[in-house]
Image (cartoon, rainbow, N blue to C red; front, side, top):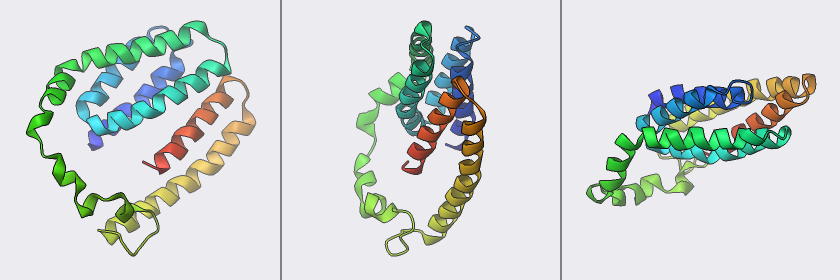
Length: 170
């Protein structure tokens, strides 16, 4: 699971470079395939954030082939990961998803800053400190990046803000 986080910055790097470097489609495809093959839940969550990010970049400067390149990169990435993805999807009948629906995994037990129902208060405490530290570092960095740049860097800053806000709820 932790190894999956190696590929996420690379995916966004290749998306950002796609407008100026057409070969970035290959990097996007390979890094997205490696994410899917490393950890499916992380790939699903990142995939939900990739579409808004690509749309923000696409609308910031009307780049016609940019959306097509993103779609090709992600599509080829899915095809490359099919050697892992297809068997994983075909073997769903052999897992026990009932274990995921017990009281320990109920969403109400995992709200932030709620010391009453936390199943593991030490983990929650560590997670809260990490989230607050990252937020305190991200907020001023985002403000500086937004104010100093215009055009595409500003669109990237908006995309990063959307990703950061989305990550808070993941």
